[in-house]
Image 1 (cartoon, rainbow, N blue to C red):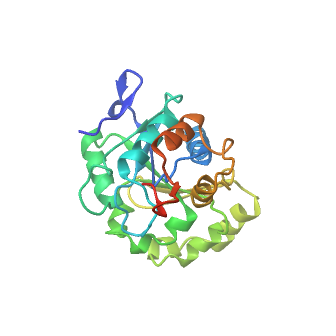
Image 2 (cartoon, rainbow, N blue to C red):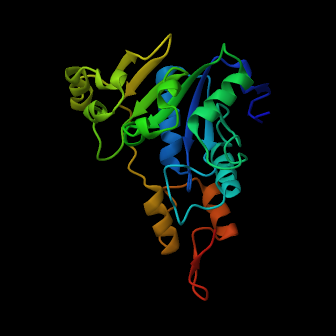
Length: 246
């Protein structure tokens, strides 16, 4: 069972659910802003934050333990009744694949639940390298959001026939700001939704560096998350041993 609670109701009673995965290393205010804006735009009932366990596409020497990242997410979303956190990937043994997560959640919450997989352009352009990518695209809606240094026109580089067929002129309209939202059918009743939300310029990589250097990050992280990082001494360098605390 995935322990996901929304108020006094279980999430699987809801119909439109956003899935927001990531390392969240650490979770920051940009992540919360993204989830809030996507939820409002698409009228989602809830958004589930899903910290990764062992991601197959990223080799991170400073990726802290899954239990810490999950706890930080729980602290960050505590003030939001429409957000919840799932341990489905942090508790999984071995590598975490999105198709396994979506399959498990569909089984857990029922076929009547409509999922919206929230993903940045930078990750989506590499989706052809994901496990069973073609099948995954038939299982839920995908919500693609902006990322620094990327354009929606970059989707033409995705080596999946269905995505390569996207009209370049339409992609140009959302890049230029002529429109802020586009949708294209994927399969069955599912859609690829391109949403030009507010660009998030907060970087977890830069945050980790600022924390290690003892710099101010108060306006970039929820206070509860910053307090947890300090208590657990995460991302800090032990000068005696010259290692990063994990």
